[in-house]
Length: 245
Length: 245
DNA sequence: CTATACTTTGCAATGTTTTGCAAGATATTT
DNA sequence: AAATATCTTGCAAAACATTGCAAAGTATAG
Image: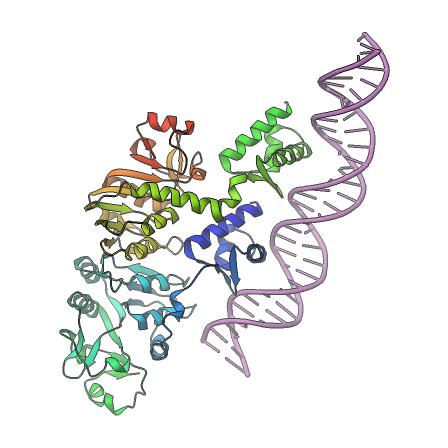
């Protein structure tokens, strides 16, 4: 294979995905990583791509990464990661906290993620060892997630180890609530299909509620917030058998 | 063999495959590598090809990724938009040309798009009046598209007005061909589910082919390239009933 | 037809580019 | 701070390019 062909292929990859990993290119083009590195360096010098540690990105690339840097969400996501284990099948909804979670998945984790969220799926795909299954359906314009019967149907055929529920309101009286009825249906189906249920909630979502109920507190296995787990606020949750992280 | 014969043989090879190796030409033409080298040098000086280390590539090849191809993709997408009408149900694959198409959809268009491609879906979602349905399944890491049985099953339950096939290689002898077997299955299903079949192909993808066949030329309703529709190259296509734009 | 000048071709010697490897330096992740 | 992963550098083997040259072929003028 000619050098120019490789360059062309590399530019193509980057154009398509906005980013490439060096190792992937090495496999794809069947040349050593050194050669790819040299190719990338050359293309970078020509200003066609931007070479970064571990690969290269498109020059005009602005990832969503900078947009959400909310500290508490990062804190929550970091705690949540400890629940992940290789070999698991994991349901995960959309939402910025789950997006953070998807970002910081360890590279060596080997698991299957199932999601109806476009952004989460996109993020998950950047991890090599992870299998991503998208629950198809009609996409909602706001949340960029698939909703409706097809998602719920697909969920009935799945038994996952754990599910991560993002966005949602939580209080001891009303349980986990939502403002979108369609989303509620999805979350209900997810809970039904999972052995463990993890709710990720920044503290401002606590002690408030919305119109539609997803489930009672008792159905939640683990609640993760950015607060200290010994906060007195959590005593009632603990009494209902919820683990606090 | 005369020098001129060799020259046209070389140009032919390059037109066909976009590239040639020096050693291959030497064998093919049964002359020494030195002679071929001199031939290539001469053709390069005439601007007909681009000589590179180890062989030569078509002149359009390098600029392909940067400016030229992007421009032609925009041109193609612009032509394709005229086929869209409000009320239609539209199948669309991934690929950069379709991505461009998704970007430039008119705001007032009111239609349903169905796709297995993450990036295309994401782009389509930015249009208010458009309904987007994602064909869920296991996501491939490379193409960021859903593949496999679930996509094909979902497609059997759909009868769309039109389908837009991106990336793919086209020639009169082999028809529409693809690189990836899984992708071929999806495209086949899409064609089956659509009344009209539109193939978007930059001219580079013409007159070349890959391992796996999607369909014959006859199954394509409309072919869109960046070239003029009266280009003599299209005569055989027209004879097979393909509309050229 | 013949001699001369010119072109083309292959060969060999020498120079250059490309590529993969290995060792040590940096960066990143845990 | 330790463990990985990635990067840099120098190097050697292989592939490729260049140059000069000689043999063979072609063209042209006398």
